Image (cartoon, rainbow, N blue to C red; front, side, top):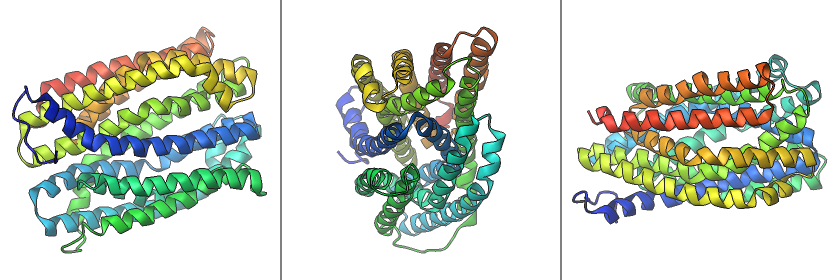
Length: 443
């Protein structure tokens, strides 16, 4: 079915499923490619040593902080471009796309310079084991070189899926993933670059992927190429809460690393286990975030056509499908947790803690999926402030204080941190559904 096809009523369930799946499955593959890249990086880092594996975990969290503006701008881009696409105004659509790409490129250059220059200061500010600081600085500086390409690629991905061209985005991401994995293995094990090859492979592959995305996006630009400052302002107005949320999310992740640093024993091994666990857990995030982005596009398109009731039902259907897919993956991970960890680390302590992390974290994954996918629908409607509040509150009022108290005060060990993460996921899912069901975003 096409995105514009009307689902007649509540009884036309298959219509809603087909619409959600047609947008979601390419996004699932794109997320799968990202997962394979991360998994390869963790695997390679583990073969070099647990210190490199732990450092990689720090560096990736910081890298995600530096790309929050790209993600925030893209949320605004999807919300506006998806509506312009169904409004059938090619001239206006072209100007919106040009404005979004220009803003993304400018932000990418600025953040690249900041990340490169501030890397040593950031390492000194963090409570990082001294033996990891030099490696972490090298990681961040190499990643900084690729920020411009990363910003352009993220923005183009949003434009393409908003204009019903998500399969072209899939092609670009497939090429980037294959290149990244191959270069990572080659640079680390076949050249003197060593661990630095992990970051360099990302820079090169993202650059190639962004160029391919730009080639596909130019097909959308069929009208005026005038830059619209007001459009960028609207995109930032919609997107800034998501940028703030991602900063809060990544800072929370870094804070968890710092709390782990307060453990009385095996802290480096637990750091490595956490880094691996997050990467393995990201396979569960694949369909969740894929359906999150699909929901944003679907609801944005339907709202652009004033089909409000259909938008509401489509959002719930998309969330339900996503939770079902996540539940299947949860069972697979639980049944194979020891084998998975043995493939990614040779250290006994790291493997033991990693398996424990997976067993505990899998409990909350269906809640995570429900909240995240409904949040995607709210983002597509422009209700990004509502999403920010309902994700940030459980994060900083439940997860971080509870984890710190259980570790620093009661000395319960790393498992207490994993359980505090579960508690915050359950609260988040409840708050997000309540916001969605109130339907204020439809107005």
